Image (cartoon, rainbow, N blue to C red):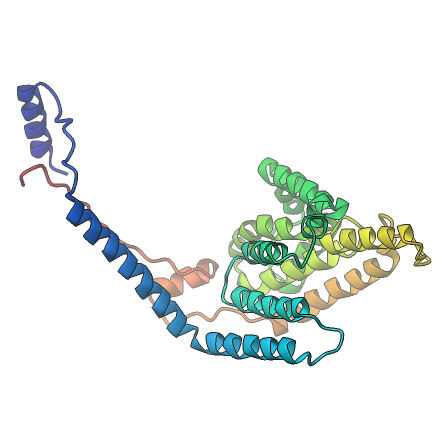
Length: 320
């Protein structure tokens, strides 16, 4: 940025009575058509490039859908209608899309809409999940977890246990134990998301490789979620299915309450924590230090590579 060009611009503004607010003239109709045609060509090119990269999936889906169409036409399965074959094809297509990193929520919503448009499912079946008590409970738990995240409660509670230690096994034990306890009452996914930066900073401070603690962190959260009803969304969905069976006259023989699974899950969690503490230092990979250079120093300091980058930003005045 040049102060001289800025002063020249200010003098020019003062001479003309202010900045120039005139807008650029509209493009001619021919130019607009050319721009639209260029955008369309670019879109077609992008789609063609994507299809070429996913050629194996495209061929597989084409053959699979053809097989479904033939099966529906020949009535290969007695109990199957054309709606059955159509649904099988959609499910296979959804799996392929999600395998290619398409957002699962959008894929499943699109499949639901297609099934409803073809009158394969009813309105009640299509939107039943939105009035499910289990789904609503999961949503409420995510709100609670987000509140705890913003308040820093979980980091403060777990941080009490994350003290200075030089032994990797003892450090793993001190990490896993509070995470199991916290994730038993808070959904495990936000617990892991909140604890990753805390664990990374703690590992670097103690001179340990971060890779030694990330897998124990994730597994501890999942194991803790099994200990109570609200620890994981799977238990909430299972409880709703049991309640639905009771309404339909099917008695499962037991009730799923807050601590129904704790007598079994708690000992399993304790054994898993001890196993990760003892064997994690031998099984989990550590980060090797290179022979020298800035990357080697940063690896010794905390397992991170630090690079310096320089950007030069220039501006040009009007007419220059």
